[in-house]
Length: 129
Image 1 (tube, rainbow, N blue to C red):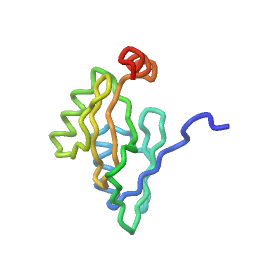
Image 2: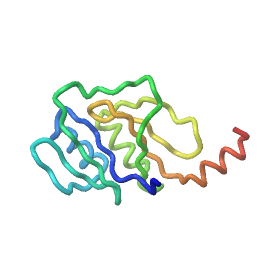
Image 3: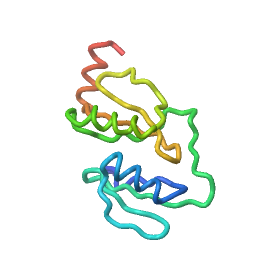
């Protein structure tokens, strides 16, 4: 039986560009790097970057994405840093709480979010959705 997420891997076209994005803009911690990839940590979550020679551009027609947790006090500063860096937003937030939906350099859909599952369920119940 699955008991959690082990790691998340993103295929990337340019390792240096992706490392700068995930480390400098999102604040992930570099753990290891080699010629075709890198391991990063987002809190305790293991993130792998894997260089691909074929196109890594993602399908933008779906809502599938990865949401990164940030503290409420860091949300606006992190969002502003991303916007100032020119990242592309792919969706306006329509759910409870603050969220910012954006693309990484290879078009992977990401989100900044700080509410919990309990917060989300309470919102759904209160709004009869």
